[in-house]
Length: 224
Length: 225
Image (cartoon, rainbow over the protein chains, first blue to last red):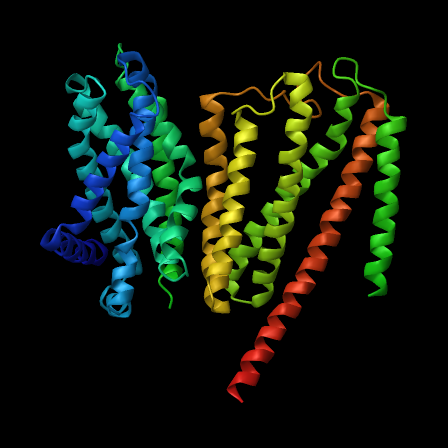
């Protein structure tokens, strides 16, 4: 129970910090918008082409945005020398990760949902009829991005060239998430929308594997 | 020192002998022709690279729990040697694929997995070079190595569901697969030689890393005085 109450307090702190400045959310939204617009120049976004390439480029934009957005997650603690204070205050170090993880998933999901209508308009994709299913896919996908992302943000915060290191560590590892989320999103945006349970199950499996790894090895990631 | 030289000489003779076997003793494959000979390099390299990455994972785990520098040395040695073998696989694959499939590269499950593995272990080595403090470098790269290794089956299955074109396993495949007797002997011996090469390279790299660590220690000591 202490884990949950600790996590709740820390999550409150994460959300408060972000909503005071809203820096991360605004910059990420604009970044995704830029990428989505720039992508449209690389192919002809007719209806059939959009259906083929749209979901993939949307997820690629999310992945790139996430690798930038997760950057300050631990860097902020390090710059303000608050990491040891955090470790002392939380009984279980996993609570720190859990709070950051939930906050990151929430921020990612929020930016994705903000960008979804813009994407649907720019690329002529129908989304209203499958919105709940899409949100489910986005949730599982974002969680899959946020779990290793939060873990690696603790690693990259300690390295030189950290701004480049995080995408380099994170993006190859996220290959399965990219494939599964793209496939699931593509079949939902198809002319005959279908919820691909196999890919959803795969995403859930990915989340469980890395959440377990984070739970097992999280405390070592916080060593200074 | 004498042991290393002796080992290297024996290994050189073994590799020369197995190369002779592969080219002169084993028959030429019917449908693919001479290009199939590259399998005698491709398959043992792939095998050695997977063994090396397994060793790397084991060393990473041991470092996180035991915190002895020797596990860190073994981890980095295995990652570098494994990366070298994967590079051989990635180069010989397209050389074979171009005449047989008619294309250099295809995004098939095993090819893509190998490429992603290559990228993951390059990131591992890059991360090491970006962490200054030896203890930190050892711990964080070990943790990244563990995460990367866990990702391997997930990458494999995701791409397998997505598409696959690689030839089905011939050596341990179902009925109808199997090798001609002389080919099998050649493969087994090449395999043995490459496992020997893997051990030799790992051993040499491990010693080098140990020396580098002691130089680093001496330098910090000298700076303190």
